[in-house]
Length: 441
Ligand SMILES: NC(=O)c1ccc[n+]([C@@H]2O[C@H](COP(=O)([O-])OP(=O)(O)OC[C@H]3O[C@@H](n4cnc5c(N)ncnc54)[C@H](O)[C@@H]3O)[C@@H](O)[C@H]2O)c1
Image (cartoon, rainbow, N blue to C red; front, top):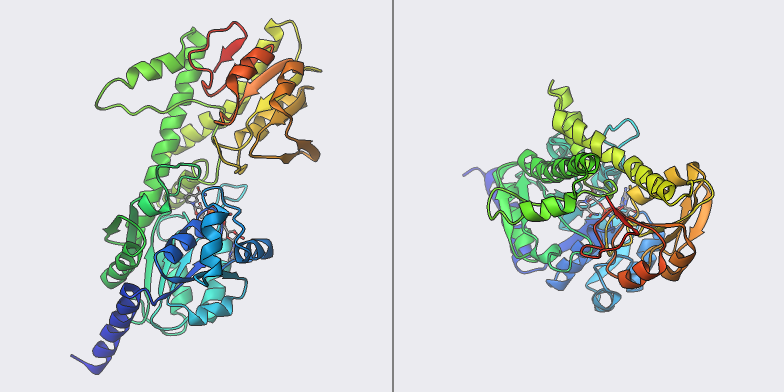
């Protein structure tokens, strides 16, 4: 064995030993819905964790033990901060002291549906300024296949360090499902793929300290593609359910009953449900990373484009349902008071990103509807410059029409049916309730 080979083997062995003994100093860049739960999980596993974020308010709150992520109670965060296991900073020079870094920054789409890599690039530039041999870096932000090796790797290797020998690089898709009490960061299996086999092995070892199940794959590209397959699968199947709803609506069949009956088939079918449109930071966005990438390789992602179109039409469809329901009640949308129940993009959480509720509200408002909303998770919002505050559920009595857009558990549906004169239910939240005032999607 050459002397340099011995040195490089030692680099991996030292890092592995630090990880096994939990002496590795863990860094999480980006303390949002993904990063904060991950930081908490590693701190709980006994590591000393430093969170790095550019948002001073989040840093202040983390250091005060005050959680802003629904799935992490402050009662879980605060003891970790008090015991010195977890702290947050905006100072990237903290990287000098770290052994591992997970990058969990946003990856939005530009208006043109091109990937916006600026957060990954800017965080990696900062990391690179303080980067040193012996580190493990794992990108977790959802992105197009090739990002880790083509974009991140050159930035880290610029100082002459070689991946797989001097440092280790992986991609691991984040699968967190905010608001899901059954599956959280610790018990969702974690896929990880490295730039080299040594990278994958160290990535696997790292996650297995804090998470229940780790699934190693052969490359960063496979790991990147796994996430895109999962979310494209969901997006296309929701698109199919939405198209079913449009078709069933036209021919007068109850789509919900159809899906429930089909779901009794014990094999070969998995139910997806229609709704007011896609929301959140993942399902409406991630498949377009894939279509952008494959377009460069000369392949049009036709399923993705089609499902994107159908899902994008759903807020219009809901608006038309409301319009028809009001017309049938002898009231035009113009001047009617419309109460939207639930504005976050999915039930029981406060995340408003890409929420179809905003589209539904805007469409109704542009047609002259007087729109208000009720959402215990979202105290206030801005609708094209109009500041709205969440109204109490009782205000349904004064509305001409109530539209259930997001079916939060906290809503008293019995009371709602009692109070509201007319309800358009886009989520089948009133399943089983028989009333002439309910119009279903
Ligand atoms: N939220 C989800 O349910 C979910 C699920 C799976 C995957 N993801 C993916 O995980 C990634 C992160 O998503 P999120 O929901 O946690 O986003 P988020 O917006 O909640 O959090 C991102 C954090 O990164 C910080 N940040 C931005 N630029 C930074 C920089 N240059 N340096 C340091 N910090 C920076 C922001 O201030 C913010 O706190 C995205 O790629 C997303 O697609 C999200």
